[in-house]
Length: 305
Image (cartoon, rainbow, N blue to C red; front, side, top):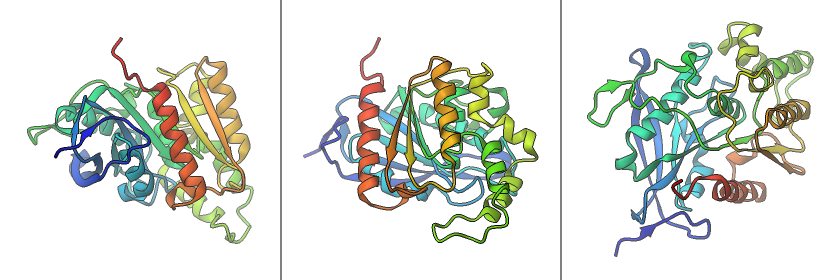
């Protein structure tokens, strides 16, 4: 008997996983891992595009397996992206690929069983910056140009709409320039037991961004504060208490800017948690997943206007 799938945080459904090519910028094939609840949708499902962290220079679409499976088990389609990274590629290459990922989901909505009006985005760390930037700058000309794999297998621009209806960001590097200056201030420190390495992060910033001006251009906080945002979808932020990778002041500045611009943004503090906690199963990971589902339930447009 085929299971009838609908969004239900208490399900859980079994999950199918598959890797598919979604884009091919400059002849580089990019893959997406699709997590999909097994069964037939009772109605078209909501989707989340997932953007991994790794300081714009490491990790891949498989990094989000823990939360990808959990979110899909609740009746969401999760599409975790590969994208171009430094030092081989420079900003805004990753942002162009993330925008392409959103367009790909809409182009393939019938096959995925997805409602194209219900596409959100989730990201962690540097992926949180990329997710937030996509959320506030849909349709940005500088993020165009990555061709997607269309349903017939050809390459093309696909749907013009690369907007998202909500954004979930875990410990995002919302202001790359502020974080760069923070790690520069710690450049003489040896690597920490927590995994923090100022040298590694400095090298990653220098590898992906051409200069400090590019870091400033990619700052979500600056974009929102300067009135350059093209959208302000509902946003949820996870802030670990013991995050030595993203200073609390960086997150606070984002919250203040978003609220002043009229956007709705919620923040959850995670006492005792460290940067990157979502990558492993833990009580904090379970809490974050439950809260992401709760936020999605509250802010996804489940009913047609």
